[in-house]
Length: 417
Ligand SMILES: [Zn+2]
Image (tube, protein in one colour):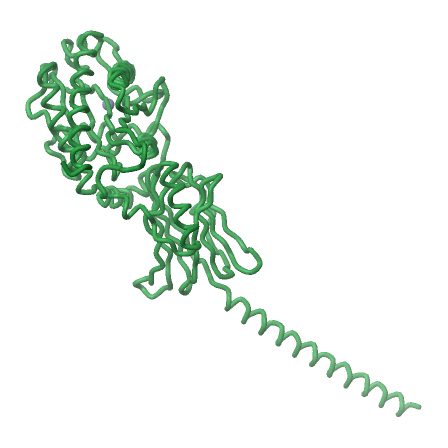
């Protein structure tokens, strides 16, 4: 009995060991599967986004080369990137939406994973590349997107339907630099941008005249004069006293496929005797120290939005310089030249009235843009003129004449005549 009992005990113990071994083996096998499975998942290891409401660059890092497909969806405007099953290890603060991107979503779809970027409005995918990281740390998807018109978004959507989705090349590369926009039924479009607004009053005279009011009153006059010609579509970036960030103004111009952006300002300057109008275009190097100082002051407007731009500044500046397309620039220069000529017949100009500096509001890559400083609020005579409806009418008429000359010249270029 006793021995039988011992044998039974031994047998049970042996069976227990065997079971344990099986369990251990099973656990090992399962964990091997789990490891192997995790290894087959693509790893999204980082996400970076820089830019603003007019233009964004998005970079997503992966531990190895991702096999992707991308396409656009409407309602709301979305860019969808289809990925193999992916383990996302992204920092919540990196994917926080901003600028042109209203929402960033990503996740598993069962058979694959997906990254979805929702635009603040219609946009164009200028570029979408899968690139090998130079430091050997894997691969990245680099996406350049910029604000565009609804028509442009729909066109890209239609194109992708024709090419059955996947890696449709961004149509924008062809769009930029094709000269006059040739959308059917497109009328010459002017976007007038009254500087400042809302909490951002702009410059102020010693008598209390505020720049944002002067620019709005003038812009309305100019809008009416241009509309009266009957040949143009005319829009304003704002038509009441609201704050608008600089890149929002650029975005509005692009969404209307503007042929011209005219930003209206009336600054102050320490030299009280200095007066007269100035026309500015964009350049990465200012024409003179005063132009640089003015651009710095005007660019401060974005501070009112409470935007944290300092972190991105370097990258944004790179994008900005990248954006100064030669053709748009030459159109801007040509309009500025025409404008100075027309203004000289009706209003006073400062010495060297055609200048340039890095104004953020002039950075649309495909909208010829100028900034007009109508006069100086620091000069009492200029201030009196800016407040005079008569003077405003004269100055607005000169700008309207300049627009007519520019539009005619551009139409001539388009037809090759
Ligand atoms: Zn201003």
